[in-house]
Amino acid sequence: MLNGKKILIGIGGGIAVYRVAELARLLIKAGADVRCVMTKSACEFVTPLTFEALTGQEVHRDLFDLTSERAMGHIQLARWADAVIIAPATANLLARLTHGIADDLLSTIMLVNDKPVLLAPAMNVSMWDAEATQRNIACLQQRGMVVIGPESGELACGEQGAGRLAAPLTIKAAVTALLCEQSLVGQTWVINAGPTHEAWDGVRILSNRASGRLGALLAEQACMRGADVVCIAGPGTPATNADIERVNVESAQQMLAACRQYAAGADLFIGTAAVSDFRFADPQTEKLKRGELRSMNIELTANPDIIASIAAMPNRPKKVIAFAAESSNHIAYAKSKLVNKKVDAIVANDISNMGSDQANGWWISADNEVSIPSSTKIAFAAAIIQHIMELA
Ligand SMILES: Cc1cc2nc3c(=O)[nH]c(=O)nc-3n(C[C@H](O)[C@H](O)[C@H](O)COP(=O)(O)O)c2cc1C
Image (cartoon, rainbow, N blue to C red; front, side, top):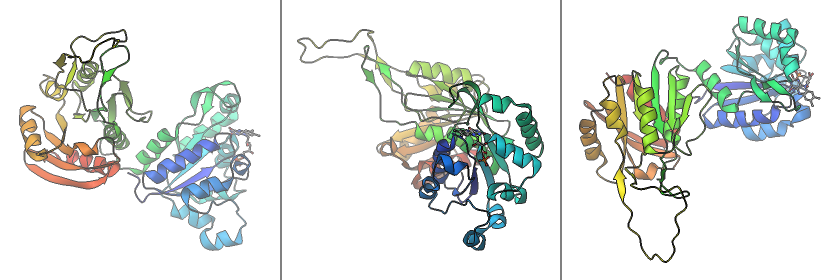
């Protein structure tokens, strides 16, 4: 989603600087070209080396640096960026930006900049609540800057309240939304993800190798395009950003109940979850003992077919997309599922994709059958969203 996007991170001098390193890493992983500008105070908390190593780029610090000015000075840095993130946006930076003070490299760049700006404030709760800070932030918002956070909770200073830097994943989602075409605004998408855990006894489960990564990526990418997204997440599904409504479930039956509840009347349902076909007929709450047993027969009961159940609901989503992970005859199995489950399209993929960062497969609908070449799961998810948007 951020492939080739140029993002300038302006790093202020707050205790949360160390969390911005994770943000830089996430942005780079999503394909962005990241450059960092640190204030003098920021360098008191973390050395520029951290950001230089993460981005592979020089970290800009000085306004009066001849070499930098010749290579990429304050004007060029502002022109270069597609978007600017200020994180942590200190109370001091907010004040300087509000008043147009240009007394260091970052504040001078900000006076030149005409690209979208995301402010991620982080500070002590009283600094945040201070009338001056609140006036400044309101003024910057009025000028079109987007403010993300701060979040509430325990602060680095030990006090409680609003002041924590928004989670790096949330900041990444917000900047992607800033840079991304908002083609799904007004739509509700429900996506299930991950494996299920079917309890056998107090400690043992029946499950599979699904990681939930693809479902989480689809949820994230739909959210970044403006959709309201609910992710029904099986155990181990990666973290999703705060704008995604997340419902954690364990078993297939819990997943079915949550999917039916949220999918009713939605615009789209995507079933990426690797739902266990069976559950234990007689699960125990205590831990079972092996004792003298040399073998054991266990009775399994078939689990409900979640996709077919969603597709058969009277108030079913306008579109239902299924996934089929197969070990052979992918296209033939997928085509029969397309008909039997009465879904609008199906993504056939190989079981070897499970748990991996790579994926490949086929998009199959009533009038279309195309291969989605091998790529990272991020690119695979983007290709699927593109096919969904083209679905008549
Ligand atoms: C240990 C320590 C932690 C600080 N944490 C924050 C913070 O989280 N947020 C903030 O706005 N200021 C914080 N400050 C104050 C800023 O560092 C100070 O206002 C500085 O002038 C900010 O400079 P800058 O905005 O140019 O980066 C902290 C100061 C110290 C000594």
